[in-house]
Length: 575
Image 1: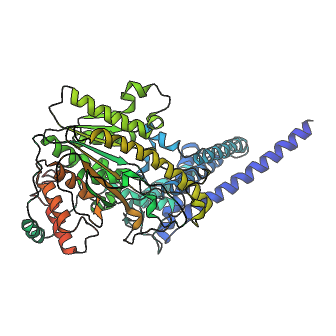
Image 2: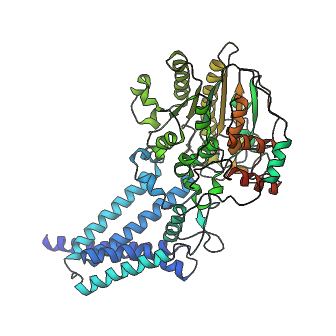
Image 3: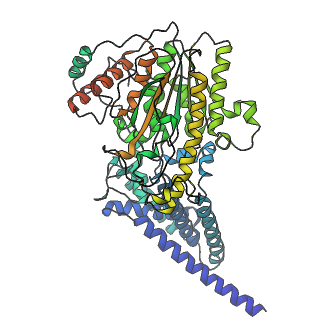
């Protein structure tokens, strides 16, 4: 019996040692993927070498150090690939801010494949631990000189990484650095070069604003909004919302959504140019609240909402507060989610709420994301409006900014295919996900209709209701072809503004940039505008709603020289 046990133990040791070798080799291989040149090779290989040398210097145990370095490398690679599958971008240093906040973990639970990967990693790591325990009995601890050498390797690699942090330039359009012809870096190189996001300056004031100022001066004045009191304003960010009828799906019979159609109360409607696809809602939030384009901030693009938004001296919250408004934000997630509540407060919002602040919803199990059903968000918004109008702040007009979340990916590929999408010539899994998505939009459409009927009745107090899609959805498959032909069609959604008071309907525009939407809201509300919002309004009229799509690049450059100039005062003077 003892002989059998000894043989089994010996076999297990050989198997585990073989597993260790395979995983170490795999870690080196994944670390070197997309290596561009010799220096990038050192950078990428440091993902294995740096933790190995550090662990060896600290513990002196060879197997523990090798296995630990391999496990870390494979874990980071796996998380990066999962991020690419679900969000179409790979791992960067800034993701640590997301991972380190437990409030953000609610979004992770929406992606079940992550549990499978984490389970496999846990099993593999456990086997490596058993192997390391057995191997430690047979391998000598590293000598003092070997550990000192390992420490020197750590110092040398760290210095090399610091010196190489700008060897390639971070590119905002690809969310990667310009490594190789594909402009795609290896895992460690991408992490290193993404640090450039934290080294930024505000957009320069270079350029001549004269051309823009001449055009602005020639514009006719805006018509008056005949109200004795500014209207209540509701701005609803519709998560991942895009009219699927804009896809070429021959044979499909998608439902008609009222939220995409004009009514007698429609004051502005049309396609909307956004600056993200499939995720990064905060980029659209940044634009719709500040009137700025994330790409103007270079490598800082990804972080602008939290880092730049609160520093703006003029944004939608501050403008409306200057006009006497009380501003409320209704979030569908934890207040700490992506640090959003602190950002809203820093931008000037008076109160931040979630459904947990409503007794009728707080009784439901789950976290904020779980209970944030779209109809509930609409009901809560109505309650906020009604209580405001009957409460101690009734003399103030209300600005309510709120978001939905249930339209967000992932979409169930096993959904029973409907809307004749099986006749549309698209893959079956995509048809299932599109069916799921179209059904979620039906729920959203009903919620928008509830607000429209309740708030925009003829005898209701003056109200402006606006909604927009923050970005298109990502179906874990390329989107179907589009019915329209514009550059970057994936970065197009739609918006609509309705109001129950007399104000001229805006002419239809071919493509309105989301950064010009806050200025349009201010114009239709008839509020007093500061220099920043006057500038935005003029640009919208001078180039038919376009910014980056504006064919007159001289005008665009002149506009930005004006926008970021000292006269507008968008940022504190010492910036």
